[in-house]
Image 1 (cartoon, rainbow, N blue to C red):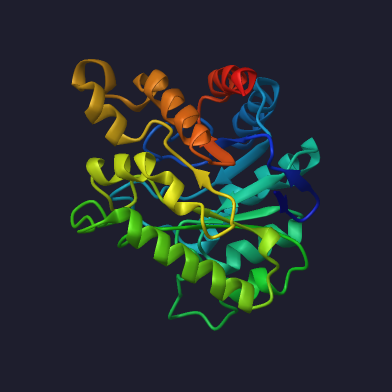
Image 2: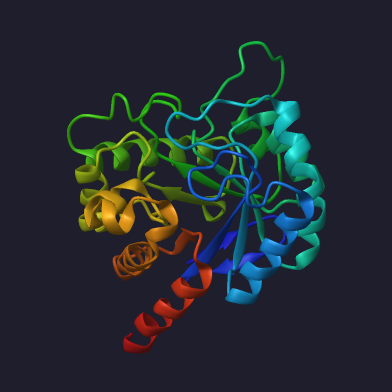
Length: 284
């Protein structure tokens, strides 16, 4: 299985590691750590030295309760970093849900659009292309469609009810099918069950336990367990109260996700994840 992106055709027979670069002041784990251009680029370079295959750069936090930012503010944070990151010779992903931001990023040469809204977000005040139109008229960019219940500002106040696995599967199959019918080739699309996005801890772990049920749509699976609060709740407040204390459980969850069929894992701790996946690769 391969993933077509703007400039790369990624072979997913080997699991790929997507390194997280947050150029934000308020992301749940590392907000403010890489908020200026120089520190963000140094972090990009470190992630590549550690073994990242893809860089995922975001300029608006989507943590639970996060406030939205304007298009202008997001672009002001994002564009200077993207201009330099795309020169590093690896696929660059933009974590954004706004069509105007997607268009600017693609015009700069970005390879992947990673959208927590799965292209559904609309700006009622703007007279512009929809997210689907933006990616569909691009000849080759990769797209990651994620399942999210609700929206970031309120999603954990009213988490979804019922079987999260079945609901995520049906949503992602529909979203991917609609995008394919809009003219986007299947090999450009990957899906993400959205760990932590409007789901309880039990629902998140059900998505891992029954992850195989998400693989029947023939779209590669991208999973992001890194430093999520469900992992902190599992290990307890003494050892997991802060996101950066969740290294071991994050790496464990990433390896289990790959063992259960995920093609890409989105992580903060690239070096440790790459090392752990080498063990899994050795026994395979």
